[in-house]
Length: 302
Image (cartoon, rainbow, N blue to C red; front, top):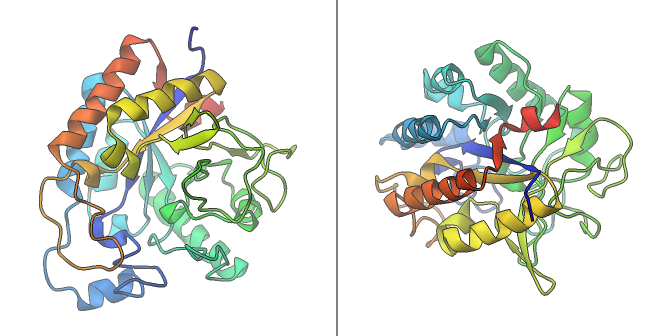
C-alpha cells in the first residue's frame, strides 16, 4: 500500500531540569524553574550540545522540523534558538517554563484559565520576539492537556496543537479520546474530542494498534524504551490512517550524565545517548527510503 500522507518531524527543546520530577509538578523538587535557578549552583546546561547534534542530523537528511521550545530557554541558552532558526526550522511553543498545567494523576487544572492564558501569551511573545515571526503551534508541557485549553490557544493566535497521544497505556488528557485516532482533526469547543468546525487543528501522535491494544509509537520516552522496530511499526500504520507525528528530545541523545536529583522517575534516562541517536537515524533513513514526506507541521497544515 503506498503512503500518501506526511510525517511531521518534531523536536521538544527542554533541559533535564524541566521534567516533572525536578521542576513544575505537584511532586517536583523545585516549584518551578525560577526556584531552580535561585538555588541551583552547579552546571545546568545539558541541552546545547545535543541540540546542535540534532541540527546536524536533520541537515544530513535534508529535513526541516518543528521545534517546540520552552520559552525560558531563550533566557538561559543565548543563541540556541537563533541556531535553530538559521537552519530554517519551524519555531513553536512548548509553554513558558514547562510546568504542568493539569495534574498528572487527576487531570484537574493546576492553574486558572486566566493564568494559563497569561502565561501562554507571555511564552508566545517571548518566542515571537526572538524568532521575528508568528508562532502558530503549541505542545503542552509533559503532553498534559485539557480540552479547556484549546479555546485559549485559538484565541491567542495558535492554529494547531500537537499534544494528544491515544494509547492503551496512559491518558494525559481530561478527555476520553474515544473517537480520536492518530490523524489530524478539528476538536470540539472546550473539548479534545473531534467534531469541531473551525480552523484549529489537533495533530495527535502515532500509535501501533495490535488487536485493539494501542501502543504509543510517536517517539520520546517510548523511542528510548521500545526501540526503533516498534516505533517504525506504529509510524507506518499511522501513516496509512493520515498525517502523523514523530518526536524526540535532544536530551534523548545526550551523552553526559545528568545531575542525580528528582523523584518518581529513577529509570527515566537509563537508555539514551548514542544508542538512541542511532535509532533516530535508522527510523528516518527507513522512511526516507520509502519516500515518506517528512516536514514541519506548518507545511502539512497549509
